[in-house]
Length: 226
Ligand code: JCQ
Image (cartoon, rainbow, N blue to C red; front, side):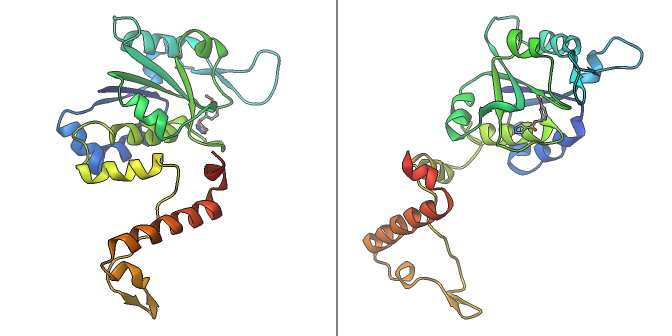
């Protein structure tokens, strides 16, 4: 999969996407990642990327010209082969299902929003998918892009060992994970639940399911209603 990130802060994504599993995925050729500075597509001498909003109001809006130029240069000449994504708090909420869908694409171009937003003509005439990673505002869409890229790339064949696919299954099963423990069996007087040491796999499965439901009810009651 090819991924192009277009941002005003390339350094914000560089380090987190150059470590660990993302580093190996790039070394193995599973992902071909390029991080670009949007200012490289400005043509004025001050490299201006934003301007005041028409109609008045707070803050600045990202201008359409450099964003269109960047995407038109980076996109595949074959129509529809590149998915153009805008990171924005006003987008559709990102989840594991969307990550799985995107992992089937051959080319993602991710535009990182900033300021009070981008000129709406970018959304209407260039972007295929406006995506939010959650209901909070970041200073910088590059932070959100790192989250999306990590969640998508780990699903690509050959990036993780098969032990990890079960973890996704339990997520899509609609419940949170049951609590996990490792050695020592007693730490500061706190004992690991005895059933986990019993070797009784049927009892362990039953306990895990009960705990998963309890944890989901406490932390994510919205998941139980679905
Ligand atoms: C992404 N959840 C939050 C901030 C405006 C495109 O317009 C804007 C983009 C940003 C950066 O992204 C986020 C975000 N998912 O804040 C303001």
